[in-house]
Image (cartoon, rainbow, N blue to C red; front, top):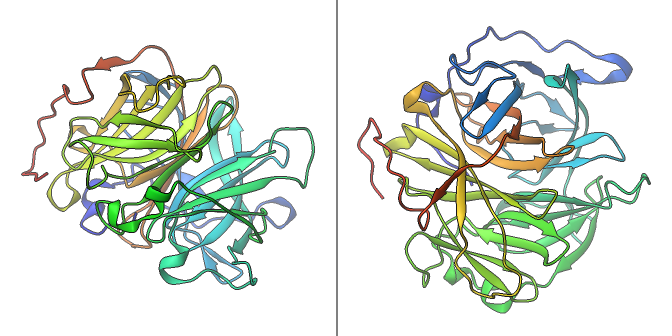
Length: 355
């Protein structure tokens, strides 16, 4: 989702920017150290997560495509690279580097434009890509990865090669193809993941026009759906989903006050009951990061599992020079706080908000 406003006011780096140096084999280092909080150092835990390093990505250009606007990410174990998807239809190949299990650097490997079935680059509203899933990316083979992408303003799920070549258009349930059901043209298929029991699972950013207040429908392509209660924060939005080993579903939410100040990012966890179509999900909150409490945040929208329970989280800078593209490495550390319908947690936002 594209947003505007003075996010720079809540996106203050705790380090000095440096020009990105070239890396080995033609790779370009596009990262610099970034501290999310002056109170939580890399390696330390906060609530139900452990932070394992974060960097800010430099908006360099490659093949005429600028690194920024990142709404979706996916890890390819076989190719040892992180795919990053912009909401103008550009796909970047990144390589993260680690020191002692902590994210320290990211290099840019390649960039491609997503293309339609006639091999034309996606443009305008048709290029508004939001979420990304990599399949066949951990089977011990290289070259067979399939990337599935959900889109917002024209809700659909398309499949591509890692070089952006069109493969297929997946069929959505009829009611999810109807743009009139979404709260706004820019609030359609924001989240996407894949589970063995459901296949693809997607959800809109905000509740559908005929849904209960604060409840987002998560749906499988076969028509099954589950009711997901958003956290009780102003302007709460579901921005991504990620399946974890063992069957848990990790969710990423964003909330904000007036003019996006302050901004709140929540990591939560739930589990689907595959036998109960339409069930209201029980959700626990792992961590809430609130810029009014010292967190230097941005518009986090993308989530993907790396290895084990460790994950990457990325922010969308909206190609705004006042914002930042942040890549964070983290892991859940234990039980979260169970929320009553997702609406029992109240946050004292320091600025006037509207809902």
